[in-house]
Image (cartoon, rainbow, N blue to C red):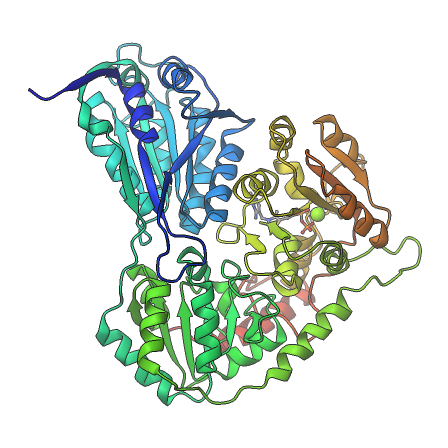
Amino acid sequence: MSNTIRLTGAQAMVKWLAAQMIEDEAPGSEAGGQARAERFIDGIWGIFGHGNVAGLGEALEKARQDFPTWRGQNEQTMAHTAIAYAKARKRRRAMAVTSSIGPGATNLVTAAALAHVNRLPVLLIPGDVFANRRPDPVLQQVEDFEDGTVSANDCLRPVSRYFDRISRPEHLLTALPRALATMTDPATCGPVTLAFCQDTQTEAYDYPAEFFERRVWRIRRPQPDPREVSDLVALIKAAKAPVIVAGGGVIYAQAEDTLARFAETHGIPVVETQAGKSALAQSHPMNFGASGVDGSAAANALAAEADLVIGVGTRFQDFTTGSRTLFSNPGRRLVSINVAGYDAVKHGALPVMGDARATLKALSDALGTHRAGAFDPKARTAWLDAVTHHCRDRQRAAGDLPTDAEVIGAVQRATGEDAVAMCAAGTMPGALKLLWQPSQGGYHMEYGFSCMGYEIAGAMGVKLALPAREVICFVGDGSYMMANSELATAVMRRVPFTVVLTDNRGYGCINRLQQGCGGAPFNNLYADSNVEQQPQIDYVAHAASMGAHAVKAGNIADLETRIAEARGRDIPTVIVIETTPHEGPGFGEAGHWWDVAVPEVGSTDTLSKAYATYLDNKQRQRLVN
Ligand SMILES: Cc1ncc(C[n+]2csc(CCOP(=O)(O)OP(=O)(O)O)c2C)c(N)n1
Ligand SMILES: [Mg+2]
């Protein structure tokens, strides 16, 4: 008879998770290096309620020395921290998050969607209604009139890569390995939800002892099909103006150095996406900056003229392609190197399915000494000079507020090589995409979901993942108001990062977008909103009340000083600076069209003009491939 261990469902889940290891390659190693095995799920964020306190809560308390539990302030933002951590660890480490049933569980939905869109691993363990249904309707139960199996957690189905409901303790025997397989497979990587019925968490079962043996998972590197490689080699050899579009997949595959060598050896310039930015340092001579909306002039010029576009680990989303108006040279071919078939065939691309590093290496071997046609390196240096000029401290007249570009300039000057700029929504993502000049790995942007409220919690996740790096969290006043309370958690846990809060008194970027679409300024800035009194929100006092070191920067020079002073503190620093809401990040020639639908009929001239421009731009979209 095989050995068994009698445990509750919750105890078994915790014991199993604590035994799951991941084999990691030495950082930067091309050959795979010395593999180390470390725990894949580092620990769990939890807010307890009746749906998880008695079951999972008991199991986690018993395991607290070995498998840590951390308390946060909000289920969504705890999950943001977990997701940011996984992103900063290049999907090689993850965290779990547990909630009660009902509102705790539905609070996870936005974060799950964020992880889903960005293909980032997180293990969500919301409590669920009673499997035995005896106390129905239990507190917070969502009652479906037509379907007895529905619970609040069903909201998580479309935003989970793998969803399971654990309604018998032995379900864990199959559900848990599937959860880890999903999270560690580069092609399916994303959020997993194990909705855990609250009575099942507490029910005992005789689990086979071998179920809990230490298991080492491996992030696979799928090799490309040699036929697809040879098709691409032929295309590269025939191309006069090829360009590489580097996406997040380059970073998740740890293919940064391979990409750098590939670009240098074969003379193919690189443009980046939001997720791929900092795969190459901005100072790398083949890095022409990001393409598309808020893209660099240098990158967009390359993109417009390219006769061969080679995507590496990119989803080709609208901001990268200027809503399909860029990369639209009539004769151009488009190739997509991607580990996921879903992405590899987008835009009618020739798919080359495989791991970014393995594929670039196979391509390079096959290309030998081939070098592509010439490109103009001066376009890159001219653009970088323009950025430096645009981001200088302009010494404005009193009352004339600085722009986000000047704020970025100050942060850039005040930080070193190790700085990581992070952000998610508002004016700053576009501004940073265009203007931030990172070292390799110095950029963390959540722009798949661009979720307001990711920033503060995300900064904590990034700092937990990269404790040796200086983490700068850029956040607008709107995003700060949406979610800031994990700042208190970061103070309690002594996780230091620097928040640069740009206060432009409202939703600056959407106000500008509204007017760009022919609309009147309405309901974005507080000044244009339906309020009786204009707010005087004291962000310094607010952040200080949570224990952060909070200061106001009176001007750009002051901001630089405050950034430098924050270094070495063991708690977060929040620096508030008032900025103008009226200027976007761009400077003349940069930027590209973004498809935001404009009303076809309306009462104003501005609207009719905006609609006419909209129609013109739609003509430029390349739809089929
Ligand atoms: C959760 C969420 N709600 C709404 C939006 C749409 N949205 C994008 S940016 C933005 C305004 C951001 O304002 P703020 O953080 O102050 O940045 P600013 O543009 O003013 O610098 C809004 C409402 C979003 N991205 N996320
Ligand atoms: Mg704002």
